[in-house]
Length: 476
Image (tube, rainbow, N blue to C red; front, side, top):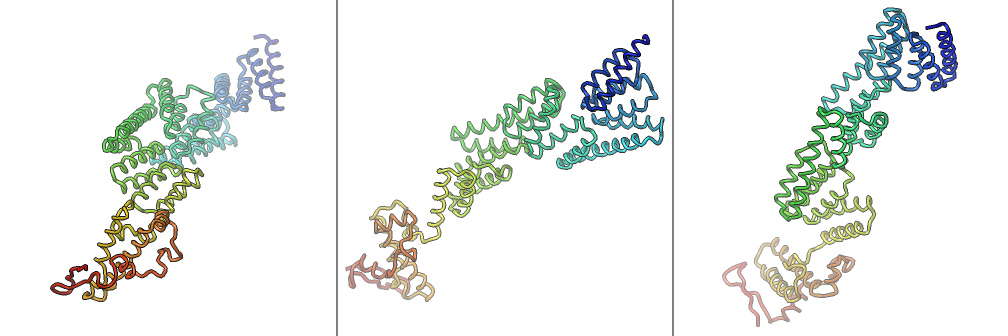
C-alpha cells in the first residue's frame, strides 16, 4: 500500500475523530469505514470503528471490528477492552472476563479493566442465581436477576427473553410481549422470542394464534423443546375444551364434567384457560345438581382470574339455587359494580328481594303448600294445620309444648290471613312489607280466624278418647 493511501486513510480517521467528538456517530462511522477501505491493516481504524458502533448500540458488528483490531495487534489494549465490553454487552461474561484478564496481563493496574472484570463477575453471579430461581419456579427472583444483569449486558437478547418468559409465567403478559416484540423487530427469526410471544398468547387463551407462533419457532429451531411442549399442550387443551363443550351442548352433562376434569390436568400454568374450564365444569355440575362442587369450581376460577365475570355470575346463581342469598347478593353486587348493565342490575335486585323474603316468615312453608297453591288448597292446608296446632288439642301437654303449639297455631292463622287475601298475597309475593311489623297482622287474633273459618261456638269440639294427647274432632 502506498504512502498516498496511508495519508488518505489518516485524513479519513481524523475526520472520523472530529465527528466522534461531536457525537455525530453515523458520520464518524462513514469516515472510519473509508479509512479501513484505504488501509485495512491498521488496527486503530478497526478499534475506532468498534468504539463508534458501540455508541450506536451495534455491539455484534463492534465485536467483529475489535476482534480484528487485536488480531492485527495483540498488544492493542483498547482493542482488548472493547472486545471485552462487547462480549459483556452481549451477555457473554466469561468471554468478556478473558479479554479483561488479557488487558491486566499487559497492564496490571488498568482501572477500567479491573472495574469491567468486576462487572463481568457480577453478571455471572446473576446468571447463576437466575438459573437456580427458574428451577425453583421463583420467577420474580429471575426477573430481578435479569434486570440487574441487563444493566451491564445491555444488548443481551438471551437475558431479555428469559426475563420475558418469567414475566409471562407471572401473568404479566403485556410486559412480556413488549420485551419480545422489541427483539422480534430486530430479529424476526429469533426462535426463543417467537416461543415467548406464543406463550403470552397461550396464557391469554388465544390458543390458535399461540400455536402459530410455536410452529414458527419450531421452523426456526426444530429441536426447541419448550416450543414443542407448549404447542402440544395448547393443541391438547383446546381439543379437550371443545370436546367438553360438545358434550355439554348434547346435554351429556356427566361426560362434559369428566372431560373438563381431564382438561384441567393438561397444563396447570395456563391460568386463564383453566379458569374458563373450571367455570364450564361448574355449569355442568350445576346441571347435575352438584351445587356445592359447582360453587367450589367457581371459587377456583375466580382465584385464577379475579376479573372473570362469568364465574361470579355462575357462582351467584348456584348460591340462589341453594338459597344462600347473602352470598348471591355479594357476587351480583360485585358484577354490577364491575359491569354496570341493566341485566346485572336486575339480577342484583332479584337476589336482594330473595334475601329480604328469606328473612321473614315463609307462609307457604307454614301451611305446607307450594307458591302456586290454589285458594282451595290454601283453605284445606289451613284446616289441617289449624286443627293440628290448636291449643285445646294440647291442653294436657307440658307448658313448654303448649307454648310452642300456641305459637305455631298463631303462625298458621297469620299465613292463612295473608295467603287467602289476593291483595295481601300479591304484596307478600313481591316482597313488600304488609305493615310496620312486617306481618300484616296488626291486632291479629288467631282464635278469631279459627272461629271465622270453622264457625261459632258449638260447631266443633276437641274431646279426649283414652288419655292426654289423644283427641278426636267432633263437628255439629
